[in-house]
Length: 123
Image (cartoon, rainbow, N blue to C red; front, side):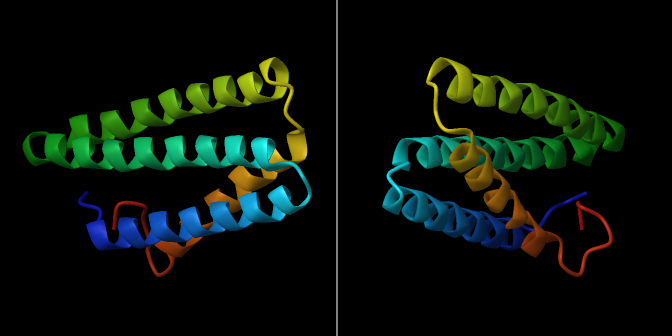
């Protein structure tokens, strides 16, 4: 169940670089705030995922089922949190949807680099 820290670190770096690239592209189109908010959503998602894996790995040492439960609960919490953040950005702050969503999605594509050559997410 242990996820390698170097692999996660590489994934976070790639996601951060992709997110910053998108912010720069949208800043050039005068949509910096919207892209920066999408970047923030992506960073929150990555940070929670990293924290979750750390907690799940600790719990799995004593009870593997509790480690899996932590991962499942984290998925639900992150899904709800991301939905709330998107609603805040798009409705409350009235940010342009394309930069917010596209920056977030491109950052998530960076997670593919973490999955390369793995059969399971926890390898």
